[in-house]
Length: 271
Ligand code: IP8
Image 1 (cartoon, rainbow, N blue to C red):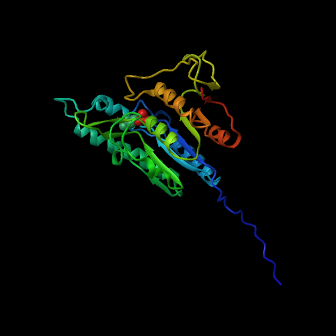
Image 2: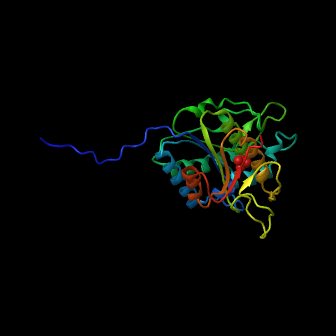
């Protein structure tokens, strides 16, 4: 009688929890040059998501805008909403189309994963953490992806900029089974004691502590590092593992999920 051996590895079917991840706009694009993507970094982050997905995690990726959003949004003051006497509607369309270009690059890098994409302009009204929009659509098992966007707002504002950091808060707090929320940024290993070269990494942070950061207000139309810290700190009251890491080293994301520690800043609950 012929004996049958099973050599192939059975893919994990056990659900390992949901990871919410932000890919900062400054990480996946060159913020100083209009619509210029950092292809290598996008691919490395996508490969990391593929590994996490193989391990059995559901994942929501939120990507920032970088030079595909902030430069033109700042020029046409889209974050301030509809301004009397200023022709902004072409810029609204252009920024949305530029964001689609960046989004498509991210989707291409994630192939062959099957992903579900959600453009905020299709389901969100208003900006900030209390935006109106049903996020149940992110509950289906698998990989979901969304991004900071130009969204419609109630009159008289009519439109505005929804930051990916506000999506991070709502997704992390409202979706079930979120085990990790990870902000992958560039420029520093995490939160630093000072913004200059003498700054030291703060490995564990809670909102009673100080830190130093730099926000390029002349470029960013959303809150930069300060908004991220505020949102991460709120999320840490609900989610066990909340981190800010240098996304130029995706292995650090893997270390968080596999070992529970890495080089980066972990946000602690204060309650
Ligand atoms: O980079 C901003 O999203 P963020 C979105 O996640 C636009 O804050 C279009 C500037």
